[in-house]
Image (cartoon, rainbow, N blue to C red; front, top):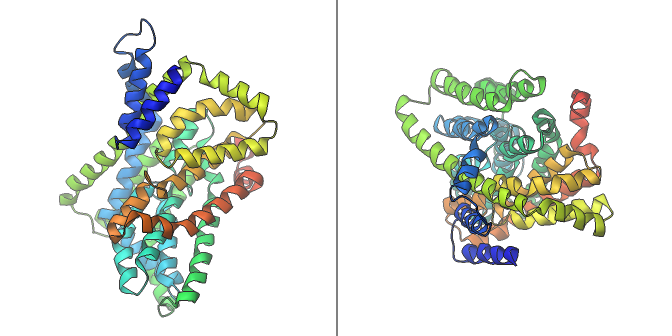
Length: 429
């Protein structure tokens, strides 16, 4: 009865428009009040303890690195480089949109910053070149989801902290699926471009391509250093995030000379605003997680699956369907905080590799970034393109289909995810 009441409170608060982080905190507080002899300060203590983690420092640091990239106009340089690569293909600017998201993903691990930084430049440019507003918004929002799949990835770091899985293994596992999603979206764009006769750019000469490559090389070196450092054990994921921020400052201020001291107050303000949203939601989720633990939800869930589900493939399908639903109204980080401790023991009974579970979870929740009502990337892109959210969602559906196809391939062909980690570092398994 308590569970039904709390679920009802959760749904009502969501329907009336209360932000999800506050909904989680209110439900957690209501739940703790049902426990006899519970100190009033218990929930705040649990919330604060939930943030007392070294790995969580990576969240604001990676967001800072992404905001520094945008403020230092490194995103613009990545766009120019991407155009020299694919601009001559039919629909070249849309292809470049996807390429730059893949490059941005390898530096920041923050999808929302990708949408904001790249979208402000490319959505107006695509509209001027004759692309429909829906196409401009859809490809920008959808390609931004790659940011949490291609390493480094903030949700992967959080999953690793929850499960003690190797961050390096998760990072390596995301490479093939992330690239596959990008290529799948580019194939979709190519088909649409042929049908709608989207414009092309003149093929860049080798000299121009080489010049652009030299210009962006310091930025392109970032993911190599980050992923290589984490996988080799030279530094932790949090140290990698700190390095990414410092390295971005150095190249933006002293190599490109596009970042000024006067830009830092706004960069820090934007970073604090976005980080505070994520971290408060995470703290609230940790409090609710403690409540779920008190009521032994994990044991109940494990018993339910063991009695009713006897196939790991069916279990994976249920996981995908569940997180697709959860992702529509909840960010990836609090969703994992709440549900991964419950689902991990069940996955282990089916002998599902935790690296595979982590990648499936992150990819599924990435879809939530472009599905209303919560989808932050979709909301940002729609706002930039001045397109109603309903039309924006319709425009992004074909790209969601691409993500789901790759997701199912990852779930049912484990080698897609585990091949690179096993090849480069078998000791991770």
